[in-house]
Image 1 (cartoon, rainbow, N blue to C red):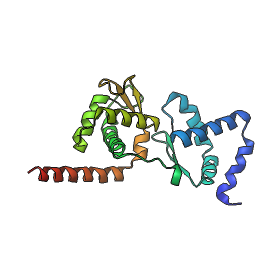
Image 2 (cartoon, rainbow, N blue to C red):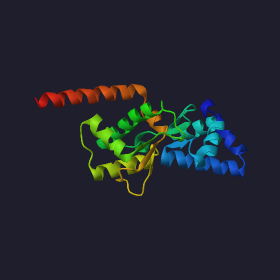
Image 3 (cartoon, rainbow, N blue to C red):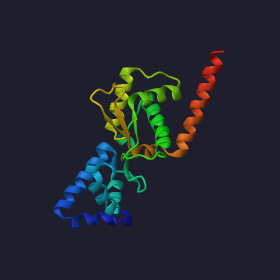
Image 4 (cartoon, rainbow, N blue to C red):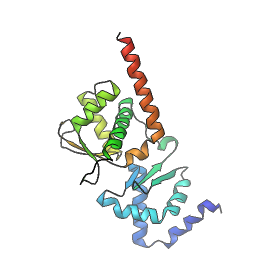
Length: 201
């Protein structure tokens, strides 16, 4: 047997309750991409997955997929291939980059909340300033819904266009976009801004 798959035999040693947790973890990772320790209802699932990480690694390798984890951030992420990959629109990609920059700033602040928070209007203004494009109301709502469904953020608002609505920034954001990719994006956005200024001269 392939040594990497030896851990699959551990599935036989799981109790009935553990096997149910295993199935829940697999479903959560494949449908929602992340398990986040800081989310109350996922804390136990996160601990279970970390304790059995070699079993999960072997299981997902059979799908030509893998797990990425950062125990400092408290995040486990599913990395699929081909049809298992998520595809984002340009506005969604820009939004994630903006949120990544905001997350970098916010993580240095002392706060009583489990996750950094911003208002929807703060995000909208930062998006407009960084990208040089004004995000329209419909696009804003769609972007926030999509990123919320991907578990990068959580929006505490009945109306996603409510300027005072609160956005929680999950630690899945920095795991989604590494520092090197962020630095490259900042350079590209800066170049775009320079080009736009030159065209307006």
